[in-house]
Length: 77
Image (cartoon, rainbow, N blue to C red):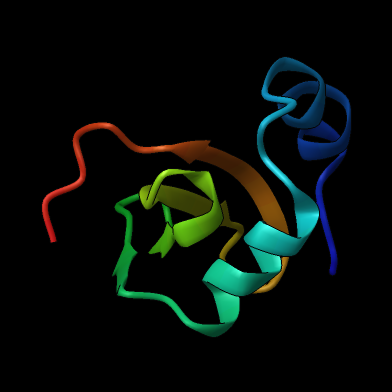
């Protein structure tokens, strides 16, 4: 999995509940995909192992390089 320096140094440190395997799971089996105005792409999927909460993963424009990930409280599928 390709990641940005921001993801490695900031996201994983600030959000220890986010697991790499869950990020990969979202990218493979997403519920929803949306291209943002800045070109980045957001993906959402439910993580059963984490109280069925929805994890949002944001990639760079290439759709592969992970830049951010967090549990999205406001997700409306």
